[in-house]
Image (cartoon, rainbow, N blue to C red; front, side, top):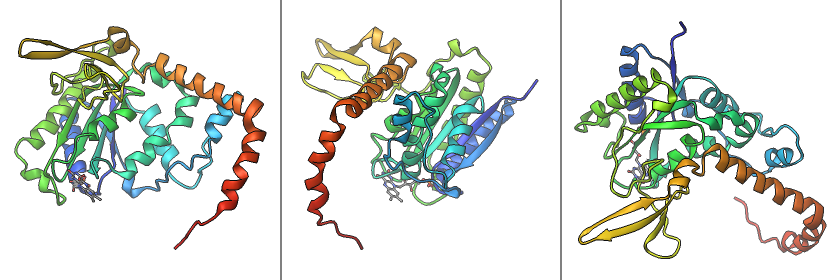
Length: 301
Ligand SMILES: Cc1cc2nc3c(=O)[nH]c(=O)nc-3n(C[C@H](O)[C@H](O)[C@H](O)COP(=O)(O)O)c2cc1C
């Protein structure tokens, strides 16, 4: 039988802390008979999305969505991560509170591949996340990594390591290496089970979203109503005496933002907006835009 394989995507430095943690997880999985392949984003050419909307425009016209950027490796990375392999472990450093630019560029470029391969939304594979920070300014990082992972993988474990500065310093952080190893074991074990049995095994808090298990919450109005900004799962804060907790909406848990139903609804909405623009608004908008084009005052180095 073919050996199952984890794809490990490192977005931080070559030989950096995130790579060490990822390799520790992969080595632990290896001991359980699971192979791996590691992709180093920083070694490759990674460019940001230019916002040309070619992919969404093609989708709206019933054509094949493609990215216009051909001179980098993001398509290759995304195809490896999203279409190959039996599981993903994604490792990214924290820069300015959130995952670094390499991760962000890869993440925002997933649209054409996802639109061409909508079966990935069925989430038939498991995934894990490793986020590493040099301090403790890390609060939104795992939530943002989940924006990518939740499209296509069932989250089994995630870790936020803090206070790892210079490459290798993570080796001196108590518990960090063992925790990464445990993540690898959990992913490997989950890979040997049917996907329906995959469960989240990482840390939780009383405020953790039941889907991405992050506790970064959006409060749009009343203080008692919360929403996970990643998964769009709504919750109501309830208190009894000194105790309080969150009751989460069970329909939202079944159909979070990054479920087949959630994404298809969103994509349908985008298609409608594009069609409305071309049919009704385009000429008018082009005329109205003239004064902004003429305004100038753009400076360059
Ligand atoms: C531009 C930049 C911004 C950073 N911002 C943060 C931050 O906001 N919070 C934090 O905890 N660490 C921050 N760090 C530290 C890195 O997360 C830390 O060095 C980490 O170990 C890098 O992972 P790597 O070795 O896998 O590349 C920052 C580092 C850089 C280069």
